[in-house]
Image 1 (cartoon, helix red, strand yellow):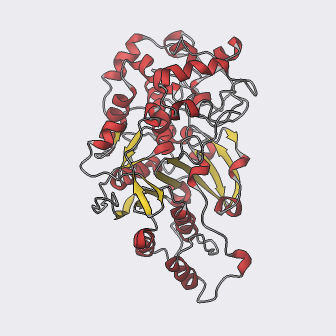
Image 2 (cartoon, helix red, strand yellow; image 1 turned 180 degrees about the horizontal axis):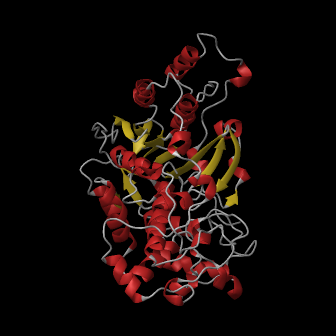
Image 3 (cartoon, rainbow, N blue to C red; image 1 turned 90 degrees about the vertical axis):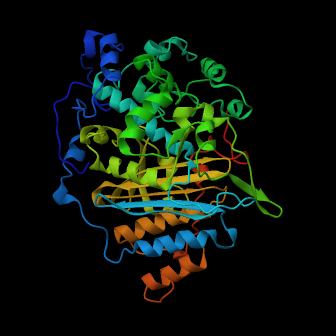
Length: 471
């Protein structure tokens, strides 16, 4: 993190193997007095979360500026160009740097059938970008002493069961947030959620899913199992998950457009409808309630204005809400995910990939990038933080098109001063590339497609055409 703050530790960082004394002298459970203190917690917190050395070593003197020639207006023009001719119906983008919001704007329209302009306060579904909010609220409870990273899920959710009783008792809060539950199936039982089943019925089916390893030892991305963290938050605090996130994250950060759930987006003054391809072009839909039932995994709605504040907070500029040691823990890699290094920009730029606590961590050509993608029917989004440059970007759009995915590496490459490549397959993207190469086009072998599909990143929270379910 940017702030070299180091506070005394009384709570366990997930990567530390040695068990530490639990709050109140018990393992897994915390006292009702601690929960009462959480509900009456003041605005500022003294974090007991132990920061990792490699993060606290990053002091302000080591943070470098973005590369010369970074022109935010050029990227705003690229974002706007993506909506010309309805390549995509609408898009919103937030960019922050050096503790400032340098862009938070909307482009295109909310609905092709009833077009209203998208602005900085137009709300989009975040899909799997929601997971970082689950990790963050859990971290705040760890700071408060209400939870521990090594708290056992079964101690808070007695109905939770895996196929192996021993494994059931081993799954920790950190395991859930980092997709290390031991489940063999990728996105187990997502098809049930898409068939309109309720979360609690589907979560009971986890007891029938085969295991691929002991909890904590292997990675397999989940949505249903990930959402157990919402039950843990309720059991530990007595507050519903959406209320806890609103009180501890949305309101303190000034995320005034943000909400959780279908009713939240539908009651927003301005919100972007989802769109899918039809014979005549884009067709708008009503958002489905299915994945909203998995609020920790996919339930948050937010605007470009909200995402700018979220980026600033995760870059360390709101220590009154998110202390630096907590950010160090949330962003610390826990398990390798080499499957993230595939074709497209991730295949070319990412040298290693890991999963942390509800964030991905990428080695992006030598720079650490904290990242996540999200997709649900008719919505997609990407978020990237570059702590070493005090830089962040969020891109949201209201269609199933993968085209805007190329905007993210275009922005990152320019901010980091990397050799330009044509990730964005538009005429304006080509013009930017020519400007960056002094008018000399790249060799054909370096002109790589920018259609790095956001839906493929989180295939369980995706459109009906790209769903990975148990085999």
